[in-house]
Image (cartoon, rainbow, N blue to C red; front, side):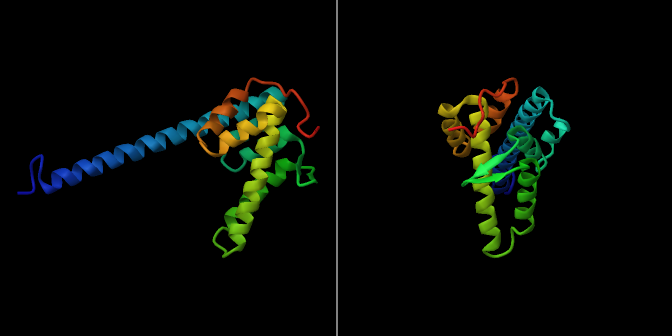
Length: 165
């Protein structure tokens, strides 16, 4: 009664197996994209002679590498002199206060804006003003492009100061 190709357990088992296969595929793609982004940041760090380049492979600490690559960060006219410490600290604070009503959302939004600005300046430094906005937008909306772009930058040298007009 419950066995066979068209029995209730057969259909449920098939759906469960397909769901598990899709989940496994998504996880594998995510891991590959993460490794791609980490290799890109590591390559940029190595090329620029940044110590502790291996931090590019540790989730929150990879923001240290982004900060070291930028050397400084300007957001809404405010200069952040040590973004290598500010960026990971901001992300950790958001993680800690994530469940606090309203404050967590406010901090998360502020961190998102800061992260987008850092990404824009990184792209501007390596690809110039004309391509920076396009790369930033494409890194946000089809987010899977961010690791690809970072990996693509690994063998590039900075071409300009990202803060010049």
